[in-house]
Image (cartoon, rainbow, N blue to C red; front, side, top):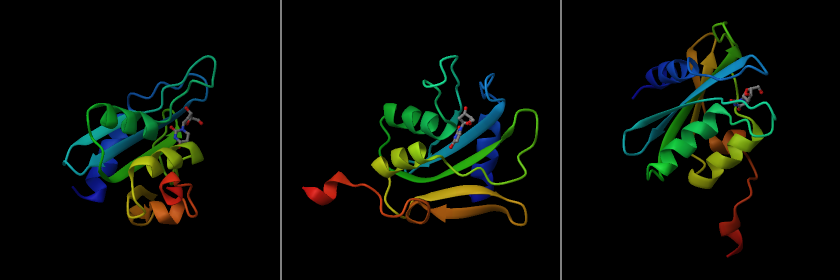
Length: 136
Ligand code: THU
């Protein structure tokens, strides 16, 4: 699975975004080590707080299907109705969820205007992360 293909899956996932409050539509495609791809979109709520980001939707779908090991996630986002033309980096809460299941080499694939996609590692976007395992 190439980064471009995974990013294309994220764009497909974004088509199902439910974002009547922010009008900001996001999509994610999570590649498990099993080879399966799990799509996610943002799902908003009138009470705002229960809103789920695209990345967490993808993670929770995958984990609830028994997946525990992951290679990469592609993420896209833009105002609803517009084609994403810049990177949409994951929010802090989603980075923490990635941290629960992924090591520092886990790859986050974002849009790049010049190259199409650009990959970052979890270590790069979440340095000094909280890891309970360190204290045991
Ligand atoms: N959102 C995501 O889906 N992923 C992120 O990492 C940041 C934000 C969603 C949440 C909300 O539905 C909308 O984008 C605007 O914040």
